[in-house]
Length: 88
View 1 (tube, rainbow, N blue to C red):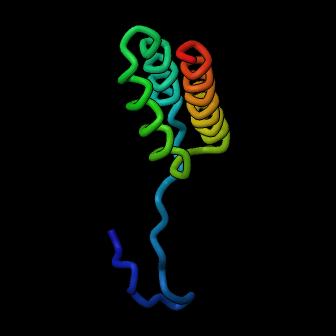
View 2 (cartoon, one colour; view 1 turned 60 degrees about the horizontal axis):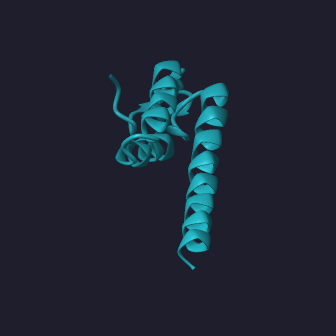
């Protein structure tokens, strides 16, 4: 592997992270959300994975991660809203 500060005739070389499809990871987050109906904690693991991977993947997987993050926040909002309505 080359060093990022090495000079070449065309100029300095900058290394970029490869963009790969994370289809398996997207599917894993969906499964964690599904299991989250029973346990709850797996939803938090899923949203952390989605936040960490959303900028390191291809555009299709990125849209799935964005959807999963939005689903988490909307679900959390409904959870607290229903909790508040049931207790008072």
